Every structure is written in structure tokens, then in C-alpha cells.
Length: 308
Image (cartoon, rainbow, N blue to C red; front, side, top):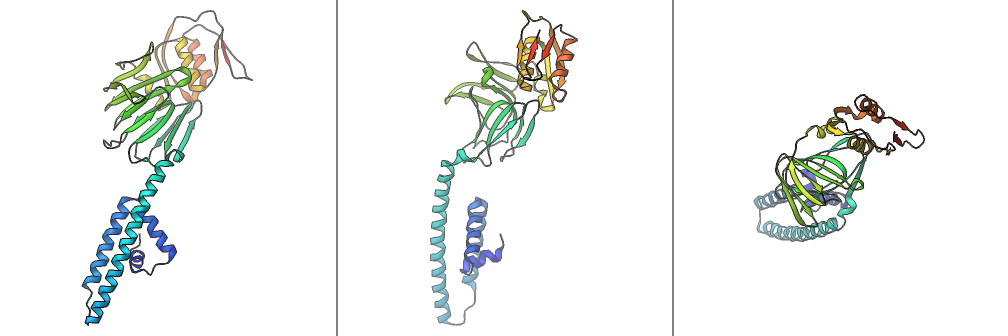
């Protein structure tokens, strides 16, 4: 903010447009407000040390200082009241400030949130996040898969809300799969710590290299044994000793393609390997056919893939 404009504001010689600019600048952040108060004190000090040649001038200065002080008091009262009601208004309208990002099939995306948290979003993921976080916490919403490197802030927890549960952290690295259509909710922790809640009820806490997932209706915790599954951040779909059925489910989710199994039974073979997302599902299926015996047909009109 231009100091000359601030001093014109203090003197009361600023235009209405300039006064509005100053008020908006002050309300923008606590740092701006602190700078405003510091410059206000400097201005008042300059008035107090200004040489005066007569008692009359001193009286005029005293009267002016009283008027200025009164004006400042009134302004600060209005400013504090404005900030208070503005904060209440922001909290009430906070939901309207969220942005929704949808990642198309076969693609991935990275973004940096307002608190410098890094987020990678996998294919077919819907992510809701605010342009600025509230004073109490940092809440985002996820449907799909995401990898988080959360900026540390013990005073303001980072919360990932999903249909399966809420993940509460203060600064850590973790991966979340939350796909309601597949009844999937899996959290994998690499650094820091996370707590998982269901309707404000704490279910489990995770330590580094642990993951949680639902099994028989219960949220269980185990050690991470397959780290290749998180290579999707680099555009790779990795399988480690997976059955054809599991692979087909994964490919269906990544590429948002219906895969219908018409074969009476699937081969029991397992497969270990990696595919690039950019190569597409047809390439992945052709490579799989070299290791596992199966046939497939694709309906060009509907896009449905039939496993024979």
C-alpha cells in the first residue's frame, strides 16, 4: 500500500474511492492491519513532535489530535465490527467458496492448495477444495483416489472427507482411495500420522507404512507390502501378483469403461507388470493376453468390453 495514500487517509483528505481502497486493503489480511496500525502510530508521533510557535497553535494541534484520535477510534471500531461480521459471513457462506475439479478417465492431475499442500488426483476423481481455508481447519472432499503431501500446521488440521470416513492429519504424506460405487475406502500412510473418523468417532490411527481398509465390514490395519500401486502419480498402472479379475476391476475404474465377464470362469493365473495410462486400456488388455489366456471384444458404439 502506498504510504502517501495512507497518510492522506489519516489526514482525512483521501477521496471516497481511496478510502474504500484502504479499507479493503486493511481487511484483506492481519499483516495489512498490523502495518496500518504501525503507520498510524508513526503519523500520530509526527503530529506530536511538530514544532509550534504559539499557544494558540498548540491548542489547535491539541484540538486536531483529539479530532484525529476520535476519528481513528471510530474507524477502528467500524473496522473491527466489519471484520467480525465479515468473518461470520464468510463462515456462513464458506460452502459456496468451494471449487470442484473432475479428472477425466485415463488422466491424472496435480494441484497446490492455498496452504501449499500438494495433491495428485488419479483418473475418474472428483475433488472439492476451497480457494482459502477457514480459520479452524483445512477441509477438502474426495471421491476417487488422491495422494497428499500436506503442509504442516498443528493448529489447523487437514481433513479429507469421503463417503467411507474422514481422514484427519496435521502434516503428512498419504494416499486415499475412496470410490463409493465400489464400496472402496483405503488409506495408506507414508510419513507422519493420520486418524480416521466416522461421524466424529475415531476408528483407527495409522503409523508410517501402514494402510487401512474395510474387511468384512470392519476397518482393519496392516503393513503396506506393495508400493508399486502408488506409481499412478507417475502415470503408471502397476500390478503385483494380481488375478485377472482384480486387474479388470482396476482397469475399469482407471479408464471408466464397463467390463462385462461373459466367460464361465476366468483363468487363475496372476500377473505382475506395469502399464502407462497414456497407452490406453486396449494396449493393456493385449499385453495381458500374452501372459493370461482370455479373449475380449469391444463394442465400438457403447464402449463396453466383453471378456470371453
